[in-house]
Structure formats: C-alpha cells, structure tokens
Length: 199
Image 1 (cartoon, rainbow, N blue to C red):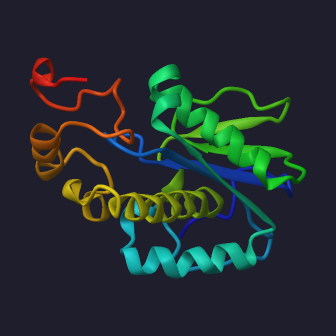
Image 2 (image 1 turned 180 degrees about the vertical axis):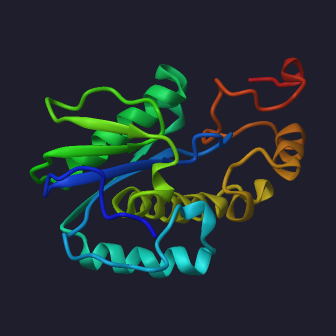
C-alpha cells in the first residue's frame, strides 16, 4: 500500500517525468499536491498500470488534487541542455504551473536541483512508494502519450501512437528508412551505427 506523501508538510507536491529514454518527442513532467484524505487502491507507478487504468486515474487525480501542473520540454531544449537537466527543468516548470504554495517536494529518482528555497527529497522508485509521486507519474505519462498520438498523425511512418517515441526495433527501422523529423532528439544515439545518419 502506497503512503500518501513523504513529509509532514500539508502542501507537499510529488513530481515525476515520462519519456526520458525516448528518441523522439518531449520529456514530460508533472507535479501534484493531493489532499490529506486522498485514497486510491489502484494508483501506482504508471509503468505498472494498463493504459486504460492510467486514463481512468488521470481524471480522478485532476478532479481530486489540490493542484497539479504539467510541462513538456521539447527536443530542441533537450539537445541544448541534456536529458537530465531537461527532466529537472520540466519538474520545476510543472511546479510553477501549479500556481500554488508548495512547502515540500518529493522527487522520483535520485537527481534534482533546488527549486526556490523549498525543501525536497529525492526518492528512488518513489512512484511505487508515495501516492503523490505516483499521481505525478500517471499525469506525466498520459499527457505525453496524448502528445505522441497527436504528432503521430503528422509522421505516421514512425508509429509513435504505439511506441510513443521509445527506441523500439520498429522505430529505429523507420529512422533508418526515412531519416529524422523535427521531433527527434539529435543529441541521442538514434541508430546503433550513428555514423550512417545524415542530419
């Protein structure tokens, strides 16, 4: 059973990202503050949930959270500052978007940079331990998946609606055949034999 939050602060936000290991599309971060009385038996790390459950939970979280924010950091910025910094920027931006008082931040993972002067804790596998981080992981994943489905319409040959930009065999084969798009991350190793790729 997941605990609600890490600290004793009332306004603790959980934050997480999705899409860090993808070859295309943004890294998407979310921040969520849940009420003290929030309970949910299904909510867990988004990777442990079916797509159907994630989208069902998305509306529950959005309806019941005290505040939430979502931020996409796009490939151009990822290439400029690297994926770790882009992930942290996304988390900071999603906290900004909540437009509310934050007393403490629980972060999924082991890397973060101070946000204003708010105390924080990095928690490895935090999305499987605390409901507020799990809620952020679900929102980051569902918003990112919707975005990838949207840009799939523009470039259907990469099948982003299925692989969501992750480095599947099919996605790599399409990069080899069709080259890259404006949505690909040029700083990533897009093909095992990177030298053959023309930019």
